[in-house]
Image 1: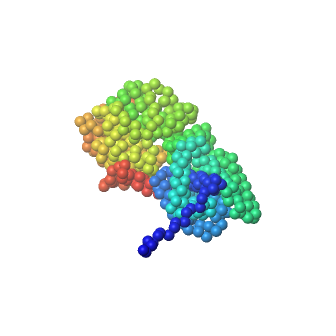
Image 2 (image 1 turned 180 degrees about the vertical axis):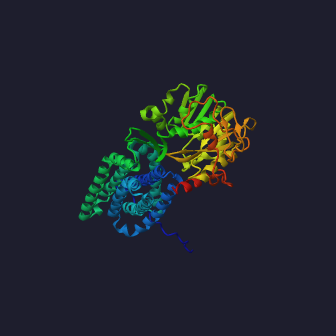
Image 3 (image 1 turned 30 degrees about the horizontal axis):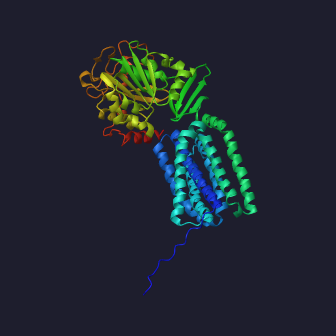
Amino acid sequence: MTAEPTAEPVEPADPVKPRGRIARTAVLVAVFICAACGLVYELALVALGSYLIGDTVGQASIVLSLMVFAMGVGALAAKPLQRWAAPAFAGIELLLALLGGISVLGLYAAFAWLSLYMPALIAIALVLGVLIGAEIPLLMVLLQRIRRQDAGSAVADLFAADYVGGLVGGLAFPFLLLPLFGQVQGALLVGMVNAAAGIGLVLTVFRRELSKRAMLLLAGATVLVGGVLVGAYAFADDFEVTARQALYADPVVHSERTPYQDVVLTESVSLNGNSDTRLYLNGDLQFSSMDEYRYHEALVHPAMAGPRERVLVLGGGDGLALREVLRYPDVREATLVDLDPAVLELARTDPRVSTLNKDAFADPRVRAIAADAFSWLRDNRERYDVVLVDMPDADSTATAKLYSTEFYGLVRQAMSDNARVVVQAGSPFFAPKAFWCIESTMRSAGLKTVPYQIAMPSFGEWGFHLAGAAPESAVSLEIAGDHTTEGHPIASSGGTSLASPGAPPLRLPADAPPLRSLDAATLQAAATFSPDRTRIPGLEPSTLTHPTILQYAQGEWANY
């Protein structure tokens, strides 16, 4: 009989001794910590860009794509280092801890003093990506030195620890590090943990692989990196104050970074004793006390010409629009919805702001809600006579949804019969496509619009869209001839009306309180647009899935 062929024996994996199990566990714990730290570095760069630049999607795309590409480069670059895996890993972790820890601080400095934010971001993302990519090959070599294992099992163990570490780092950044330590100190703290994990693994499990010279070099490098990170952590608050002040012409009197935005209040006093208080959100000016009344009178009072017992203010957490609403005694209820509770608290408690809004939030008619306006409107079942949309400009992905067809559809559902809505729409001069895109979007939601504009020293030319949704109660604005409406007459200026058929009349209430910047003639002139600023045809409405407003706003404002 012929003997049947037998399969070649499979070489079993080396047995795992107790010390080997501890060593393998130490390596996997190091993988876990390094992965968590690496993801925190990535998220910190994205978050800082969203605060400073405002384009969250763009910043995330740049950072993630560059870092993933660089990780591949780093994995290839680590191949020659595998012969000296332990000291190479320790050196890479120290360098990664140093650069990752100070990355946010360095980028903030590049933005505040050098105006080199984007080149610095690209360089930092590439370098961090190369260092992170070099970790896994070296850790794989170290893992196999403890116990030889088939490639599939080794990769599974390594990647499992890596992915779980990424999960923990991704959750720790927004829910732990940012609230407790902030971006600068949070990144520095993660750098310290990163350095401790790398050096700790090499000096305990792989100490025998280090020569005396390597030990001395690593000890010196550890002291240097640790000293830099600890020193930067100690002076981080002073650095932030100095860097933030470099961004603003006037002295910063209040600053805080909330989970939603960077809030800064400045105050200056001129030689004649006049003070100017300014509020900035993510670096964008929200108001100047010198001329904010021009903006808020134009925003509020034309919309108050009609029923107004129940008023809804979306945004406007500074309370200045609310101040104008409360000047009407027949307003029975004013509901304000703003995303950031820190802004609401500032408006209530900071005397510089509460004096401007005349303690509007203390009025018993006011109900202030800290919530996302879009989500709040989805759950809202109440109806309002007036809706004021006082949102930041649509120059970021976070705010673009507040200028979408879907959002204006929700606004329309919140409007009672004969209700009016007014939207701050940016500058028809600096960003004309964005301005007229907002009107196109409002019309796509079934709103009948009439645009108007004012001049403000701090903002320049600024525009609004007043709209109604009930055709049976809407009266189109006619400027071609003399026209008188209830309350204040609107005389002809020879201009052309840009109002939709059925839009509400642009007028002041008959019982409007004394105003500093508006009267009938001024408001009539506000509805006239020069030929070079007239409606731009063919602009597509902005939607959640196709935010055209974001493209227009970012493209146009980038020129100024």
